[in-house]
Structures are given as structure tokens and as C-alpha cells.
Length: 234
Picture (cartoon, rainbow, N blue to C red):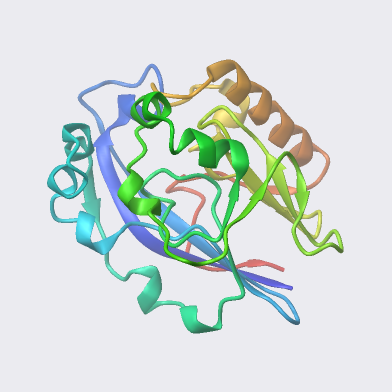
């Protein structure tokens, strides 16, 4: 089993958007990761990064003015770093624009929320990111054994969005995604200013902190001090 992280974009904006209590005039620039998990028979992409067409003018691309509050950068898209023709599955942790692209696997509550008008507005979803064609979509509820052998588990960790999920690999590595944008958030619960359910997000953070304290390595969603492209497992 091998896991590699790729940088598939950068987001810059007021730090106060991403961490409650920060100075609104300070800025933060954080990486957007995607992960390739390789087993003997599978090549699984976890998240897909920014849409290259959205980078220059996200407000215009999505037709939603709030998208323009973020400065987006993209050096190399996931398509330029991964041979997508060899992928066997794509797993999305959630459908925010920095995580969603081509979809074949999505938790059902996230999928339903992604098509409910009120949820789309509340969670800042952009439906053009996940307007899928005839590819197979597998919807799962709750925790899910992806390959049926316990090696890769999808963990339901809602709150940031309705059906947010994290990924546990070989019981040793947890891709926490946006349960906590920064590593410190698992401890202090200083979440972004937006969430589908802050109480649920706090419970999800506590769950991941428990896994960390039991010995797993938990990767935060976008921490520039933690995330580096390259091998992350073993």
C-alpha cells in the first residue's frame, strides 16, 4: 500500500474565514491536496483539487459572487500529475470546489445535500463541479469498508458539510480532510466561520483526535505547516 500527496492548488483569503478569532486583516495561503492510494489492484484518487477553468475568475466561473472572495492558484492540475486513465476509483471527501471534480463515489447525505437548493447555498456548493455524466456513482451511508478487506475505510465525519467523510488507510493513516483545516483545530475547535453543523463538526474532530491519540497519523485538510507533496504512507 502506498499513498502519495499531490498539490492541486492554493487558496488565499482572510485568515478569519478559516479560523475563528483570527485578525480579519491577516491573510492565509494554504495548499489544496489530493491523494493517490495504490494497492496491488487499485489506484484510488482521493479528492481532485481545483477546476483549472475556475482559477482565473472563480466568481464568474461559478456565477456566485462569494466565490470571488478567494484568490486561487494552480501550478499543475491533478490531470497533469496523475495518469487518470489508470484510476480504478475516485473518492470525494466532500463536494466543496477545492475537493470536487470527477465523481464516482460520494456519501449519500452529501449527494442529497449537494442537490438541495438551501443546502447548496448554506454550504457554498457549486453544482457545476459535480454535474456528472454516465459514470457509475456509488452512494454510501455511514462508515464504509471501501475494498471489503478493511484496508481502506471511509469514515463519516459530518459537520463541515452534511456528509463529509475522512479516509483511514491500514488503520495507521487518516486523511481527515476538512474536519480540521489546520492540525491545531482538532484540539481547539476553531473552525471556519461557515459549517453545515458546528456541533457535528466538533464531534467529528473529537473522533479524529481519538484516532490520533490511539496512534494513527491524522492529516489535516489544508495546513501549510504539515502538508507536503510526496509519499505520506508508509
